[in-house]
Length: 486
Ligand code: GLN
Image: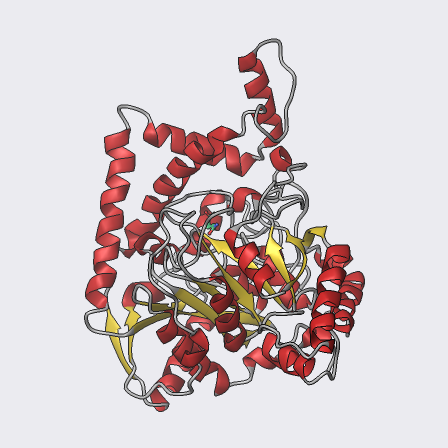
């Protein structure tokens, strides 16, 4: 099999056995990118030169007989809202089109400590606001399973790179579903860790109380390996959880006997594509046959989660994005006075969705409306969290669809509200700060369907185990998008 199609764990084994070299592997991924990038457009910036040097350094270690880390020499992509020292980090926004950070995000340092090879910076919705990558300030990314469709978003370039063979793994960020939903649309595994499990230092803030970085990979084993590399306490992130991260590969056990699974009845209602619901039901039946106990549960405040999110996230965004004023960094337009300069810089730099959210957020935070909107949304957030606490008193994990439909066509959801509804099953998990994983559980008309497994706070190991057991009983993760082979 072509090297660019393989997983981290198989490639690691082949590297350590000296069957392949890291340079050969990097070249395989770049050659693949040369073939497919014009159709998919995963990357805003490629870092091939640096990647080749990283790969050569790993080969040198291997030649000396040194042990290498699980990610050493394995090429992966970073969403372009994760700061990389000396490498452009644009957030897919014109306002940051030429921004070169003077420091690395903590996750980037952690990956470097494992000698991971970084292929480049992946496209996304501008400032991670969106669910299709159509809001990128630069270009639209295409779904490798059907290039007329979106890869999902906002981490669409990360997911498409993994699915198209342009990276073996990738990092995304998830504020309301942006790791899990693109992973679902692209047939990959996407894991959003518990809020605070992975450092946000150096992740350009969208909505700080919701943002989390996490892996997008080809299988659950790789997800555990990347999470191992990036999880853990970081004094530079004040919301980081001060608790040692376990070795998540210990959870790669094919056993769900006695696992209590809850199916939230509110997640199978109106708006769901029937084939998606059927695929989830079938997957749950399979888990039951493998020894899991399944029961219906209720999360009664589900319908209020989306409106609460679209107050809280824009409110935080309006504050976080105030720093792009044309002075400190980023795009600057000239004006006759400072106010005009601010106005012009921001008007030219931000795209329509970002402007919409800045306006929504500013409104929700303004005096007179704060109590009616923002404070109310925070109260709803507490109720949503309490729903989960209650459900987790009865079950170990919750299973839901990741998104109500399979990948939609580029341009199909022009109404912002219709787009927002794509995240109806992922947003509540961010509001509650819980971990969630999406993995492929079937195909509908050649398009992957994602199943979401949600865990208690810090129970990443539990959702990894359930996901692994399901994955190993099926072959969905072994399928590769037929791109370029037609
Ligand atoms: N699609 C959601 C939004 O537009 C979630 C985005 C995200 O998780 N970054 O806000």
